Length: 92
Image 1 (tube, rainbow, N blue to C red):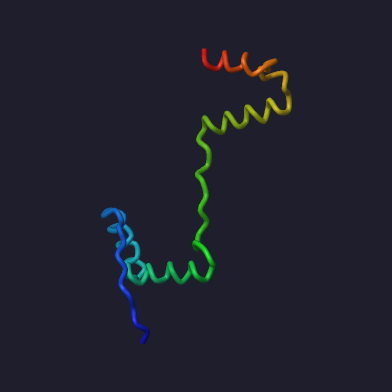
Image 2 (image 1 turned 135 degrees about the vertical axis):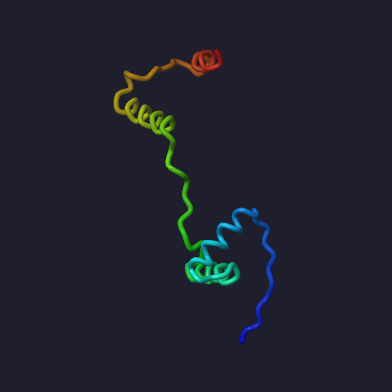
């Protein structure tokens, strides 16, 4: 049998409690689940799941859509002849 090492993790108590309950329902303890995570990370040569940003909220999505519309039809956006005029209005 291979020798096993110990590891100490700092994790929020509630997160640990919820994860332990989930793993228990899968028939695993925290140690086994952590070992599975490491094996999968080695197998994938990275994190074994996708990390991505959340989808934009409604306000951000609306701003993105507005920029797309202005790119298609520049007449609906405001234009400036120089940076000073734009900055003056932005800071007003």
